Image (cartoon, rainbow, N blue to C red):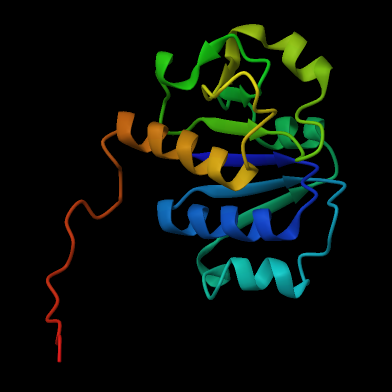
Length: 163
């Protein structure tokens, strides 16, 4: 699975999303311009010590991403999506595409792919959800539908001392 962030603006969100990608084995794809440097402390702190586990790529534009990933099934998450994210079936090799925190995805992307625009249900009064939370919600749905490929399904037994 690929997580695609189109022009992300908040370093902490990208760090948290990177950590989610590391835990899932998903590839993080960043579409420029970024609203921060990947060297910023906030990005690294939010990703904790997982950066060595993150497979990520940077692209100068969304079209460059498409050229590098031909045939990848795309799903666009937006508050303007007509379908709920749980109503579709996702192949394990799909890409979930998210827009920037302040404005979402560009309108032309949504109009070009209306059948692939999906949303996370929320109250009408709420403008949007946090980007990192939205990525986690949608990514785990893809993983669930594909039986959590490559992920541990049981906790490892540990001995705890309560003293």
